[in-house]
Image (cartoon, rainbow, N blue to C red; front, side, top):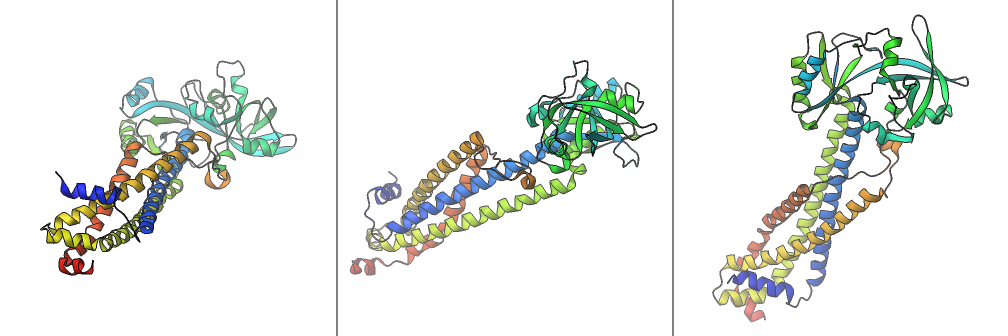
Length: 405
């Protein structure tokens, strides 16, 4: 029979407490708030990083193949990959697909109002799943329609500026020799909540840009490579580079958008600070509860010592008691955290200003494994820290405590 565990259970569940009642309740509340704050901080940080990363990946692709030159203009130097070269790239275990694209600067003219934009051209094989998620009104481009080249997706920011809606038509001018113009019909209105993207890009047909730039059927401005595991992005970029001819090179979305991804990486520091602060608060309350519990039951400790029970065994009794308080607090905290997590994921109740945070609601994302490890870490740190104040038991004299009683 595990006597320390039996004794700890009797003390915890049926023992009478006097002045330690309040501190025990405060300790449980502190542990509840600690694990609640830690889980929410991790979930919000991961959700936020995931949302921002997905926007950049969805709009630009993961790996981008371009001409190896010094062209810094909006119109990329034409390149071409053969079917065999594309198939070779797609054989990489981390590569999903390779999509061609091209860009063309243009000026929208709507009832005398003008707006400079960058037309991004895609073709019928392009995966429009990300675009479909951003659509507020209308639909994505229908490449099976006869007027596919005249269909356009514009952002809600541009639509509001020029007072446009789905189905409206307008003229876009392309500055070249000679100047060309095309009539477009708005197929859909999207929003990424990223002003840098929404104020610049409109989405149209790749075949139209080929005609405007006098490109061959196999020539494009670049290729977007979608990957399965974003954590292997750097390795996949290098693998793609190794397969490309000398006149081409591969970069990736992290290298193209260093400011955004450096900012996202800096957010990890906030997560670590919250974890440390919450653990410190929880441990301080646990130490207070343990010390008060030891002092409250000093006479019991004296009797156990007089009966021959070792200090280490008595220490285990109080550590079991502390473990019960930790478990009770973590159970409540995990319940509240997961309840709030699934509520927000289902309803998006808590909103954000998209012009500041790039998202319109508080995003959350966390795995069960992460929750388990956070709980184990908090329990382990608390028990290791509590071992030191439990050494007070060895300083309690049986004769003095029994006389005092």
